Image (cartoon, rainbow, N blue to C red; front, top):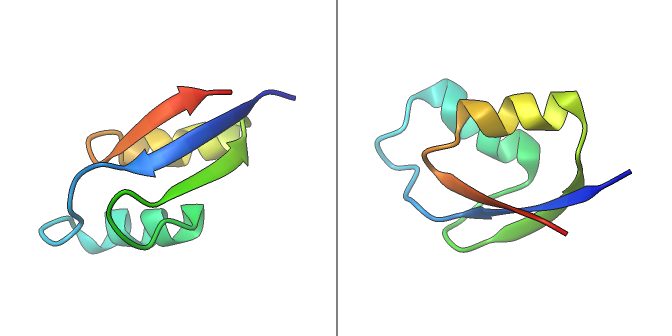
Amino acid sequence: MAQIKITQIKSRINAPKDQKLTLDALGIHKMHHSVIKEDTPSVMGMVKKVHHLVEVTKL
């Protein structure tokens, strides 16, 4: 399956609690931190929720 790289590009300080928890669930804990995940519907749903805080790159 394809993989994606998710990088946080904006601060989570003023984000609602559910978006902060979504970033935690993705494994992103601070600015410019990146993780590599499988391109599954559940991961893409989480990315969609925080799309304004992250940048997604296909690998």
